[in-house]
Amino acid sequence: MKGVLVNRAREAAVDTMEKSFDATGQGVLLDLAKSLAGAKTLTDIVELQAAYWRKQFGALTAQAEEVRALSTKVTADAGEPLKAHVKRGVDELGRGN
Image (cartoon, helix red, strand yellow):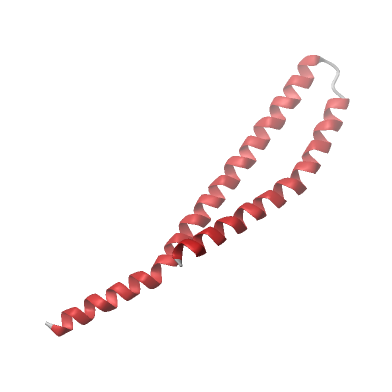
């Protein structure tokens, strides 16, 4: 059961990330295209593209961290019922002695 919950949470996070990339990516590409159209030298073009890729990598890194944090939380939350069940069993054994 725990694995199913974790997988569902990961799938939801990835789906959200993909939708975010699609919407954001289209706007960013349009901005890049406008900037490239106004570039006057090859150096300007290279600098614009490098800035674009740095920004994309930064966004990907931030989103990957969000997915990691969400996965950690889901895993911890999914384990709580099991942890409580084990504690009850240990408590009952302690009272039986």
